[in-house]
Length: 526
Image (cartoon, rainbow, N blue to C red; front, side):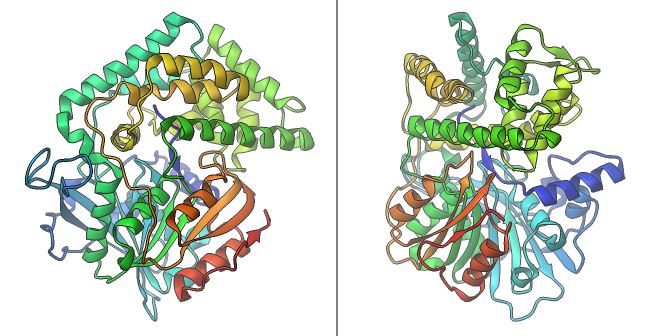
């Protein structure tokens, strides 16, 4: 893998989904209904044919939200919009061909004074916007406020290559198991070489399946698709809520189509000017800082943290023991160092995950790895039967198509050692994670990194304790765009809206009335 995916799943809603799933006696599916049940895609430039699709929320969470109607459609977009490193829409890879983009529209039956559509993207890259629109439609369980859903249709789309939108799938379940289970810090040369070989095999298989079309999964192409989504929902200008990687997608759109922007909320900002090495180091720093915050919480809340007072020591010891003698679960899976490490990563995306991590490490010390696997599988998108969604296939395809920087294996090896000293728990894994793009085939198609001249003010939201998109990237993105206005949440976890009244009121006023928050507004943690 490259950097850790930047995707968002709000804890209150996650708990609600988990409760529904447990009640129903089933597992949350990786995909809602497949393409064949969603009708024909509207050709490029034509209006989509919407149809009622209550089965999507039914399969995701067991039911639709009260007073919400769900409709689905598919549109066709050119595979190659003729941009960047691709050679043009009339020649080169994908010429004359299309991708299908899946859409869902959640519309409140109580809607009044409709403004238009709020297009949403949850990040990743590789996470489903269709699923996210469903989750956000549940206002009572951490979704969007009714003040927003009463004025906007909530429109989610799966970007090209993701979930229901011509998904890219080329990594086997066995290779994903091997990747997640691998030593996060392969110190010996033979162990490092083994991880190189695993990434090379993944790259070769994806290259053999998709060839020169791998470059077509980049962010700029997806941002042009987003303008087709805007046209499909009938809006003259785009109103957009993008989380994590979705901020990069939104920023790219603003540079390409500044005159078509109504309002963009970019929450959990990615700095587009950071290349692979700088971005990976930024995440290493962000996760290390978030883990320090977890350990301080643990020391101050020993009653709720069974691995207090030395949480860092307990986690480091658990990973070391897993390297030497991994605990075997009842189904035969071994909780190797990689799985323990990704349980830690998973828990840091929300402050509510801290207590779950502490329990999981404590249980692992007692010989029960179930909590570790629950956290790690949630992060990885691994189902109980061992099957994966295409989140990480798409994540690699998009990240590597975007990335012009390609360090050598020797550079990666050097950075692994250097970052182990600076960021002992997360640095080595972020360094060797770059091997995913080092071994990835195909051309690159980088996105633009300039000003959104002519766009209205764009709201850029950052969380001071964010591990996946560290806060320093928030002012950097705002400054790059030239029209960014920063809103800061002094909280923990990944992304901010709508977690507190301060953040919620500021974002709602911007979305609904185009009222820009005052310069330098900072919202307290609680």
